[in-house]
Image (cartoon, rainbow over all chains, first blue to last red; front, side, top):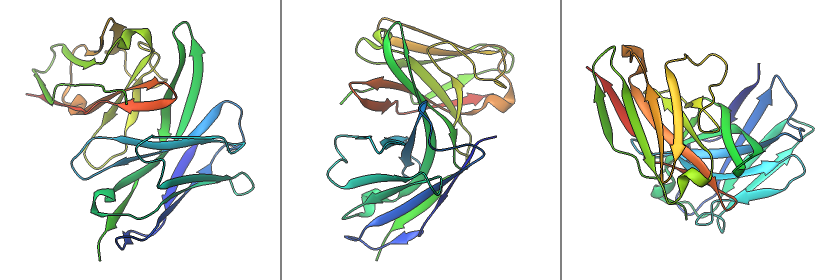
Length: 126
Length: 106
């Protein structure tokens, strides 16, 4: 059974870089079926997709975050990572990693996230 | 960016049918999926590709998508179904989530 686990600092100072890693167990991250994604959720608010990465390193990001975000992948460690630069209090959130399945049907490309990691709270504060 | 709109809250009596809507411009022209999130937990997928249930999701969960609206329907709602529900769709190489709907079973 595939499992994902987020790890990284729970507290980051304003203007610094938030760095998180997602470790995948129970299956290879090197798969031509799946992307691997990051989603966040500010306390009491809705889910916000950040971006996703393919094992080859191909990425796609939410346009409004693209200038501050980098997602990378290490297939040898079965891990993928997130960096968010120049953070502010607005980046305080629970950060989830998830498997991002893409498929193609009669209505074109679509995707869904399953399973998800348990999430990790990152607070931006001095 | 693509916007998906959900009602903030829906209430239902135990045993009755709950319907949660998700609206977006020509949403029916793409596929929608739905997640359930209980307090303090990570989301779980309950519907994908408009109306398909992942393994382990009860048959009382169903979905539809047409025109500008996708709908998650929970038949015979149980107390354990009380949660936040989020719709999600893919559009122009980006992912959009709805704002979430709090389902109260009372």
